[in-house]
Image 1: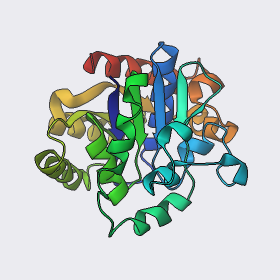
Image 2: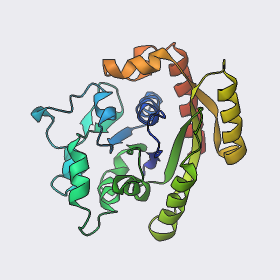
Image 3: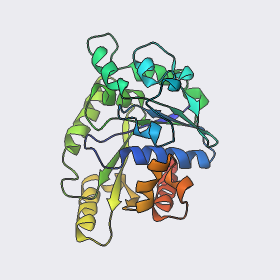
Image 4: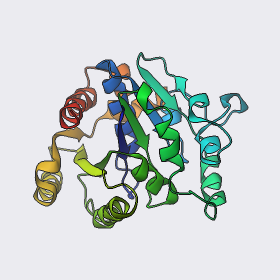
Length: 256
């Protein structure tokens, strides 16, 4: 049965999608059958793997799954990497979210879809939107774990408390098995005292839930999505690639 991890933060620009793509990539490299579900209307995980998200050739996407017009098994496609599949999305997912707002089972549609394929994978990674939206709640209800990337910058922890309250509410009302897998410090720059101070604050607040690995500010990490590949495939010797590889090992250990 797959371990389902929802990656989210209501604050944008924290490395959420980058983490989803690269964690999935390294899990697959470690021979775990991995499915990445792009559940963010921006579709950056889709385009970050070289899939053109604005074309009629894309076929069915997570928009169709959310609307109940396609099964997720018919949306999933292989990537160029062994053991690594993706369920792509397009910006139309935002319209679908509005469309189902007044419909039945609006919070459990992703969970119901995931259940039909979870026996085929070791890990299912859900890339959620940067907001406390209906899509994000769907991601939490569908998951075993919540993974929280937090940038080591000013205002880093702003909004985190609200997100954790939403998690507690989901646990109480819909998914008692959900738990926080950990907090990942991203965009860490060891040359600045601010990064160190914020990282210390994160460790103080989350204690043992803070991952030991930090993701550095790294030009290769920033460049890789424009080439439609994970950073490990773009430059596996870069600091960013090495960091995500180490982080993946921590995730594997925590989800044993």
